[in-house]
Length: 94
Image (cartoon, rainbow, N blue to C red; front, side, top):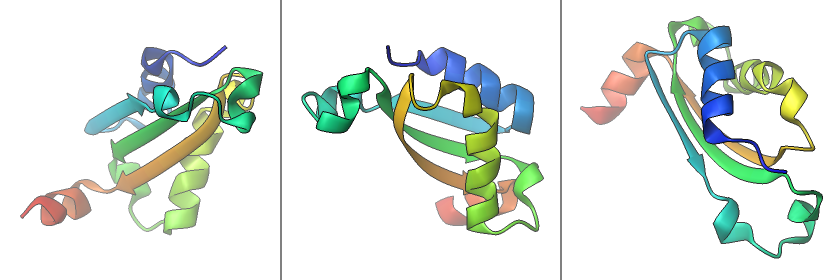
């Protein structure tokens, strides 16, 4: 059974206090994919948090994965993460 995007959002908000968060369920685009046979969904997360300051991209992804640990692999099969600090995110939009 795939995770509800609201559950993913709740867990990420509790762990990382993001100023901006968007969780997109891409599961429908992967229907029939062998890896999704377990029922786990495919998600894309955009998260902006100052807790990422001073951390590498790999560490930021680990922080996100750690917050969602209980959902792998039964509810989340694949997760794409874009993780920024507030300053990085604002610079990206300029």
